[in-house]
Each structure stands twice: as C-alpha cells, then as structure tokens.
Length: 256
Length: 312
Image (cartoon, rainbow over the protein chains, first blue to last red):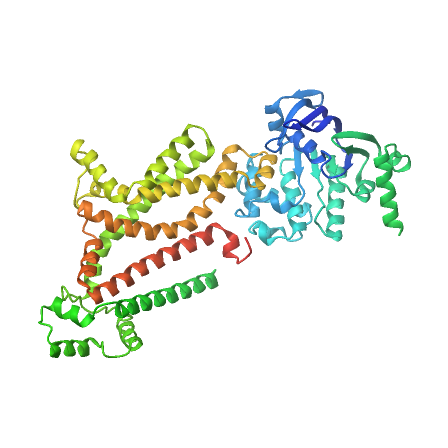
C-alpha cells in the first residue's frame, strides 16, 4: 500500500492570474494534514489539482504529483482517482445525481472494484453501517433529495471508501452542517484515520476542527503556503501574522 | 405515485371539458346560422318554415349552455351525432380516419427521436467542431423548410428519380417512410438543438466532479450522469411536439394521399359541418391529452423529485 502522496512546486493559473504559486505538500498514511486559510486562498484548487480535476479555465503551469517518490503523469493521476485517492467535497448534495438512487451510486462505484450483485450489496451495506447508518437496508433505494445534508455527507464518505483509498482529500467536509452532525462527521473521519490508516488532507477554516484532528497544519494565503508546522507548536508559537490573527480571533470567540 | 396519477387525470379531464365547451361556444357564437348550413348540406331549400323546423330539431332555439350539456350528455355515451354532410355517425367516421393519422404521427415521433436525440448528443459532445456545425446548419434548414414542400422534394428524389419508395398511398410498410420524414423534419431539428443544449447543460452539472473523483469510467459518466439527466427537458417538450406532429401529419397526408383524418377535417371545415367539427376537436384534444399524460408519467418515472413531489 502506498505511503506518501506528495505535490511539489504546484503552480496554478487562470489566464494571466496566478492562483497557486509554488505549493508543496506531503500527505502520509495515518496522518492528518490540515490546510487552513481564507476562502479563495487556493486550498480547494490545490486539492483538485491532486485529483487532476481542475475546473475549466484553470490550468496547471508547473509542479508534479508523486506517489511514494514516483512522479505521476496525467494518466497516472487519473488512475489514482477513487482508487488510491478519495475525495469528500463540501456541500454533499452537489455531489449526487438527483435522478439516481443512492444504491446505484454505490453499484457503479463498486463495479470499478469488480464487485457486482450480492457481493456489491453486502459491501455497500457494510460501508453504510460503518459510516453510521443504523438501518442501512433502507438507504439504497432512497434518492439524494430524500436525505438530509448530514446523511448525504456520510453516504459520500461511504462512497469514497468503496475502493479502500490510502488517502482522503476532504474539502471543508462539515461546512453547511449543523453542529451535532459536524461533530459526528469529524468523529467518523478521525476513526477512519485511526482504523484504516488513511492519510487525510483536511481543508478547513475552523481552528477547532484543526485542534481536534490535525497532526500538522499548513496555512495558505494568496496561493502560497505561509506556514507549516506540527499542530502543537502551531497553537503555541504561530509564526506568520495571519496565523496569529486566526488564533487570536478564535480565542476571542471562545473566551467571550 | 397513485395520488400523482389521480391528480394528473383529473386535471386532464377538466382540460378536455374546458376545450370542448370553448369550441362549442365559438362555433355557435361565430358568424353564420348553423340551421342554414344544416339545410344546405341536407340539400333542403332554406324556407322560413324549414329553418324554424331545423332550429327546433337541432335544439338551436335553446340556451347555449343547455345545448352544450345535451351534446356532452351524448358525448359521454360515445354519441357525437351524425355528420350533416355524410349523415354517418361522427364516431364511426373518426374511428375510420383517425388510426391512419395516428400511425403517421407515431412514425413521425419515432423519426424525430431517432434523429434528434443521437445527433443532438453527438453535436453537444463535439461542440464547435464539425459535427456540431453540420447539425447546426442542417437544423437551420430543417426548421425553415415547410413540411409540404419538403414532402414534394422527397417524392421527387426518392420516388420519381430513384424509384426507391412509393410516392402515394398507404400500402405496405415502406409507404410510411416518406410521409413520416416530411412530418417529423421540423420537430426533429428543434429536438436536435434542444437535446444539444440540454446535454451541454448536463455536462456542467456539479455532481460530475464527484463522479469523476470516484474514478468512474467516462462511458458510465456520459451514459448515466449526463445523457440521463439531459433527457428530462426534451421529454417534457415532447408534449408540445405531439400537437405539432398531429397538425403536420394532417397537412402532409394531402401530399402523399395518406388516408388520414386531415382531408375529412378539411371538408368538415369547408362545409361548416358542426357535429363533425365538434367531434374532430374532441378526438384530437383527447389524443393530445392522453399523449401528455403518458409524457407526464415518463417524466415522473425518470425524475424521482417529480414522483415524490419534492422541489427540483
């Protein structure tokens, strides 16, 4: 199983406008790397670049993605998607086809692993139970519009786990969810890292999420990483002014 | 689902009622005296006495609403009266002429779908390249050419010059090909462009990103997540096309001497044959309404949000 996913010297641009400049990151199995920063700072684009799923109009000018030291070309990155590298997006409702039942979303994904029929169904129910559905039998025939945001986010995580990925990219997985559900989703991610040894890249702007899950923190600002250090020392001695401002704001919010 | 069906059927029955009443009123409130038309078609000299007798026997002396209710009462028992021109029961005449028109319209729907859907998808997937440009020009020509003129051109090429297909009549399975193409051409072109737009819209749907991130094959993504979703708007438009094709079929029938209801309806209009016209409108409205019911059901089957009564 793969150990390290690395991106180095990533440059992304939309036309003449540079969006991400020289970002390098390493994601290790069983570790949680949190990416912090303002919206529009290039966090989501960096995760999409890892999947080679950049939106139209954004192009990669430089940088390479490598797995265990092997540099990947575009075909290599495409082969990674879903299999080695899972993706959990924010606003899960936008990730499901409203005309297709939850069960068929699983069927088509499990078929990529060669699982069909009864075997696929057993695996689907097992995954649904694993992400916290207490009555998984009732879920497959439901349509996305019949599930709440929290349920959809669980279903999305279960779909991502269909192919046993070594790494998971979670782009603000708890935004738009209520606090109780947020806590449940974070618990779930935490457990996946502990039990399955998944390497998690967690994009967030919530410091309490960072404090709870992360081993390491990278702060992004205007397309570059301005600070990266282990979570403990980050909270004790933040170096960049942006990090200090974030921490101060966070403390002010929770101490009032 | 049952509730959905019941509500739809109730709505369609109401529509049928409204259309038949409005048409009934329009015929009687329009210019001209129905009694005079009746006598003319029955070839009775229009004396004052004959007119009075006709008014009474046709019920024209009674209030409009009462006349309508009498007609409705009979219509509900499948009695649409007798044609003033042929003196045969209107239901019998419609049953005789309508099937050929329905067959032609159905064949035209098939042609429209067989041309519009695959070429529309192809044009969208090759956007701004030659397939898109070629179908764009074809569609532009297709919507601009009147169906009866296209019918002449088709006959000229395939019957007169090449001798491949029969020019007129309803004789054997090949005889429907040219009329169906002539009837469907315009709708097929409209459908093609609509499918293209719809596929392009579906290609921009946000859920495709997650589908790709799950590592699905391009074939699965296009087939299940793009084309399936893209079929919803064209399918809801199909209802409007059905009306267009029924009307078109009746025009094209004349060119190909197709024994449909078009010629019969034209005669009824020219002769001011009131029972025949009323029956014709009722029959066509019923066909149109039933087709739309089928399309509504297909829509509900395809889109669970419609079926479940949830916001789209």
